[in-house]
Amino acid sequence: AGEVLAVLDEELQGIKNAYYEATGAEGCKHVIPLKDRLLDQYGDQIEDRSTLAKMVGTNKAYAMARTPLIRTKLGVMPNPTHRVVTDDIGWGLCALVSVAERLEAAGIS
Image (tube, rainbow, N blue to C red; front, side, top):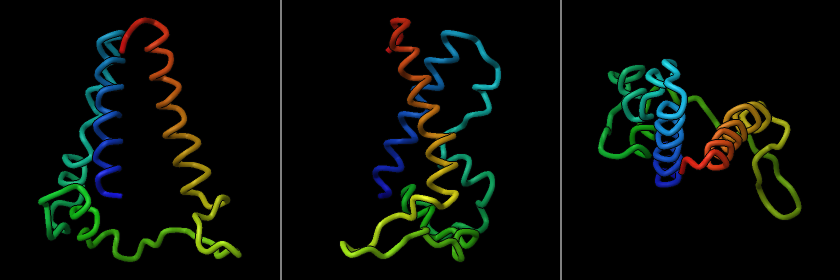
C-alpha cells in the first residue's frame, strides 16, 4: 500500500506539472509532494521518515484513523458508502484521471 501511495503521488505531481505547463495556473504551485506536505503538517508527530508508507504508519495524528470496512460472505472489503470512498475517490482520484485524460487529448503526456 505504501508503494502504491508513493506511485500515486508521483503520478499526481506529473499531472500537476503538465497542467501547469499547459495553463500557467498558479494554484499548481501549492500542490506539493505528499511527503513534503506530511512533514510540513505533521513533522513532529512522525516517528519514521524513511519511506512514505512509514511516515503514514508512524504518524501519531493518524493513530485513531481506521480503514472503513465491512464484512461480507467473501471476507472484508472497503465500505463503499463511507466518506473515504465516496468523497476521496469520487472528488479526488476521478477528477485527476479526467484532467490527465484531457491533457493527453491535447497532446500533452
